[in-house]
Length: 174
Image (cartoon, rainbow, N blue to C red; front, side, top):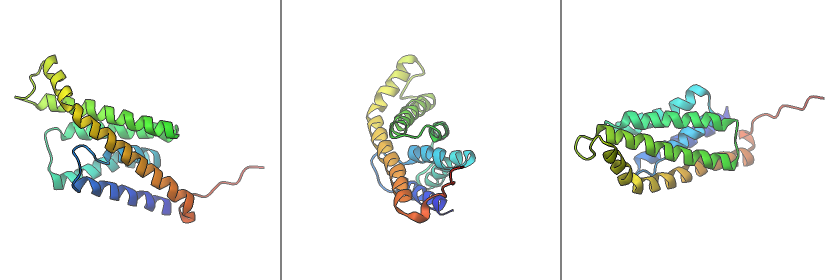
């Protein structure tokens, strides 16, 4: 139970940080989705990033692209479920990169779909939309790596150094 409370505290802190002033696209939601997929039930792994988005969007405002943003985080939570049984530093970093790329592709496609003036609904318009978003991808990648490293790292350090957070070890069978 204490392990779950510790995880929830980390998630709340990360979600609140989305509301605080920060560089564009440097946000903790990809990290929340991956972390939730690894440490929570299937249902909660999908609920956590969406709840964080709804709460923070209630303060920040919703947009036409919200459907695409939320959908990308649901897909990233699915990556987190895969990561649950493939945990290693390399896999965590790879999944963070995959989440950043997935977010970039899905959300910018949504921008292009809802664009009436900026990007024509042609292959050239879609390409222009993705090219214009490249500077934001750098921030997304940096933010995702920082938040993923922080959430997973702090959680593992807490488990290692705070005895009350450790799960019970099942004795070996004789």
